[in-house]
Amino acid sequence: MQRISNCMRREAALVAIVALSVALGFSLAANFYQRPSNAAIAASPTAAAENWKDAFVVIAENLRPSVVNITSEKTVEAPSFPGFDDFFFGPFGRPRNAPEQEPETRKATGSGVIVRADGYILTNNHVVAGADHVTVKLPDGRNFSGKVLSDPYSDLALVKIDAKDLPAAQFADSDKVKVGEWATAIGNPFELQSTVTMGVVSAVRRGMVLGDGGAPKDVIQTDASINPGNSGGPLVDLEGRVIGINFAIYTASGGSVGVGFAIASNTAKNVMTQLIDKGKVVRGYLGVEPIDLTPVLQDKLGVRQGAVVQGVGKDTPAANAGIKVMDVVLSVGGKPVTNSGDLRRVVQSFPPNTDVKVVVVRDKKEKTLTVKLGELPVEGQGSETGSGDKVGLSVQPLTPEAARQLGVDESIKGVVVRKVQAGGAAGRAGIRPGDVITEIDEAPVTSVASFSKAVGKLKPGDTSVLVVQRGERSVIIEMRID
Image (cartoon, rainbow, N blue to C red; front, side):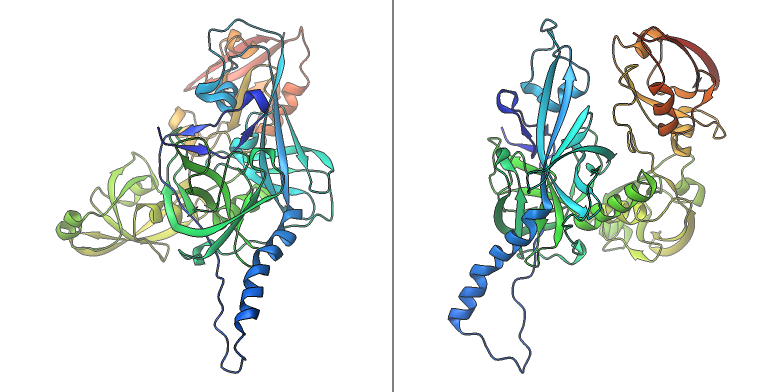
């Protein structure tokens, strides 16, 4: 059975590929030929052959020092640790009714690319998500512990290590990548360090939606060989610039069949910049469900390109601005929209609270509306590295959109409970997903960082008092720490 798989390598007897359910993809590549000027002397066939031979050698020599190996570790006491078990083992893990056993450390490996000389490394979120400890091995053999900043929405993450003067890769403009250009993938497939493979860009601007509820992605498809362990490594052009971050393959066997996918470099660069500057990624939010125009809709609505509004969310920016079902969005903030994927990408490129002009076709006439964009609600982004493991829960920032969805007054500050571990201290105390924690032992909780600080002070045997907002009600909960 064919499937989409994340390109991450598991250790020895614990090998498994996380299967994703949607077989869509994208690709990227780079320009090889340059048109000589009129004054240039044409190269001889021998010189052309030498340039061809050396092109990929130069890429390998220049880029391999920037590509690292990443190992994620998680210690579990039972085979069926919620969430993390699914991530590392998927359907190939231990049976969920297996007896408990002694604690064991499970490992997964992937790739990453150095993007700043002061120790920032870009990789996939699925390489590092949920890990207790992340180790980065540089090509020169040095090992560093890493701190993770994640953006699950894009399946991208940054790992920060305490190092300086590292060889950082450069980004290309992925919007300029064309089908047929050469592309080179560099990574650690099957733990084979610094492997280089070559192919072409097979497609661009593909819209991929992961089966686990992940976000639509602007991706590039390539036939450069990508395998488990390549996740998080770069796809580069012939100038050695990053055009994408490899993250998935379409496969029937678990190995490469020549259909690989990379998250476009423009997306990756935006995520990287926001994670460094803000600790999280914020995106504009319109609040519509768009679909592509079909030939029938083109004829009936009198428009050849754009995104058709199939649904409008209640109390969303779109609804407040008067956008209606069957409107065809032509542009947002002056940026053209040709299909539903464009609409999502363009809207999310604007910061929240931005006033934008949205041009729509309604009743075969153009109409311009002014929309104040909201903030796209996203689960689990930011720095949360294991800080809630002690009590058995994970949290995320409370955004205005999340507050509205949870029925919580927007004036309330706190963090939203994302997951609760069965049998943990939080679960036994009655804390639920969707609760908003506002205080821990009289200390205000206003961010993920303040939550982590408060939990870090708890010791076994303590009984902590939490103030939780549950919809419109405030609840006091006593939580005993094991």
